Length: 435
Image (cartoon, rainbow, N blue to C red; front, side, top):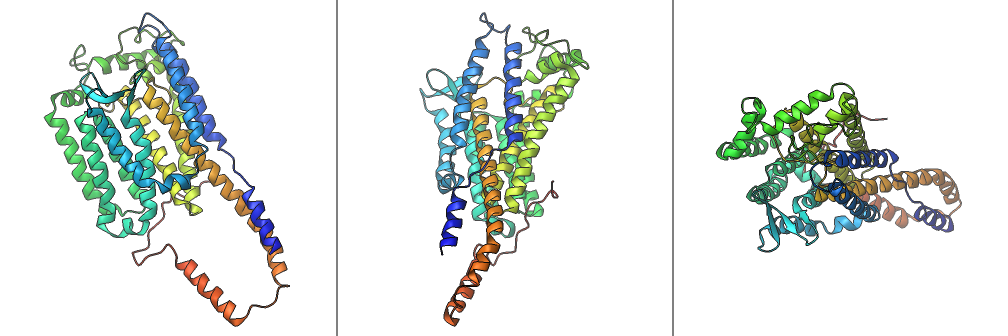
């Protein structure tokens, strides 16, 4: 028994390590964001560093929040999954409270915190991904085999989307829908069951675009911005001119012309166009490579966690990877004119306090997943190293009585059956084994 006690003590003393690739990619993107926010916003106000100072403050707050998230055990987070869902609804409803909610450009998406405004949907993205991850863990087999279990997350995201559309926030609505569908597929839901709800939601979104003139104008302007270059196509036409001026290696850092009050939202939604103008095709490829590293590493981490039966951590990694990947794709697509304007920022790069802080929190949670995964791997290695000596020591112990042997056999059968159900066995997500 002393050997077993020593092994247990040794395992408890083993910690983990944070993923250096994830941390490096996130720090590189955030550092580049600081430089580009300073460059793109220098001509927007009388104080050339007004937006830079605010961005640095939000980066600092986000770093503190990320450090806190990196220290929180995922088990404790999973225990409060229902509170997370309630928090999502409360955050989206509180913007409608008179005196607390704030309206900007006709959209009621912010709450007034006195010193700054906070866009609540950014926090909802993190909380919703964690709740959906816990749901997929609790109903893994049922999601694969029954309609009600699969449709419940669809109903939840439908309710959240309705609240978002009242603000209105069409971009975040489509993002949440995309994350939900992809995570359900990764969680084991059958594709033939997903198709019908996805088509219904897609048809509803199309109808919302058609009935709202300003959304329809965005769609038509992105198809040919030069038809109304000084009207509905103003943003996109100036963005495309900025990208064209960049050519291969850019006009030089700080030398952009389009940011001089020609390109609207040059430091937020259209910062990618300023990057393309100043750093050129080479700079754009570097940024895309950093995002590919961040998202790809998160997907790799999720797969490793699933292989170790750490499903909650794995689904969180999948969800954050999908969020950052989809939002990056939409933001870049809008700047390149291949998608209609959605009002989504470039993660970790664009100016915007709420987005910056909550993306930092998501990176902190992702790093926590990597730490716990690394800890589990190291402990498993120690178990394998100690298993042979422990079995050799067990040979010297007195033989088990028939009653003890029978009890052990029953316990092993119960342990093997635990976590299963009579539902159809689910299929784990797989992208092929990544070395």
